[in-house]
Image 1 (cartoon, helix red, strand yellow):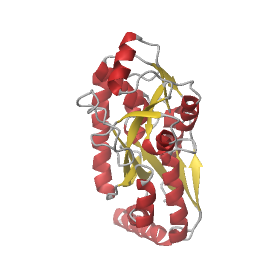
Image 2 (tube, rainbow, N blue to C red):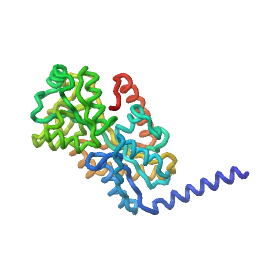
Image 3 (tube, rainbow, N blue to C red):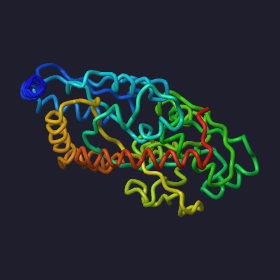
Image 4 (cartoon, rainbow, N blue to C red):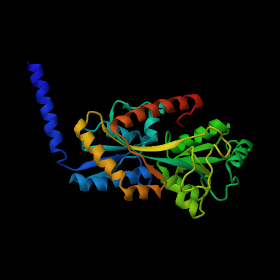
Length: 316
């Protein structure tokens, strides 16, 4: 009888808590520096949720440790509905490269998938290769002479090139940075030869003639760069990498709150204005239920664990 009473009291306590939520400011943790799309997504969601939920919502950038610092901070936050976390493809890779103090499939409660984008293989205008085939030939003739920058070990930017190197049997020197923005700055200055990066981060520079685009990482061409071939089309059959973005909360966050957050965030992302704005940046809005996002994450974790093992990818 006492056990039943305890269960009932817990149930009513959680229900009451969920009904009174939110009663204080919320935060949205981004495990990367300001400037990249993950940050843009977080700020867009935070601005709109502040209006619909009636509470301020701030973006908390926690870069460093190859996104481990921010991810750990989110995993260890109270599961009370006041902390959200902006995840991207590296989230599903991190445990295959590092020993982490959290488990991505157990310590988080998925809310919704947010969008899908491509990575663009770009080079400095003075770089001698003007196509994927020319890049492969040049890299094979000059092993280790080409350097490429990434936004950190285990990021989609890093994995895009490591997968490329593995499939083309080439070697290029990896220079990891703390975020995408400083890599872009150094490539524009000619200190970095080539890199993969999210389309939204570099498409403006390509259009301005400050970078040249060689290929996109996805199976289909990007609407923002329809004349740029996919890596597979350009000479590496079977190559494909799609960048995804999503929103999670700490595991244990009440289901009612997860459901409310899903409803509100999906509504924000599917508004015509937001979809159009993101599309212009190369991101296709793609939302889901919490359950669908959970299954997606599990499949991504399994997929990348196999890719990393088979390709022998190591964290530098």
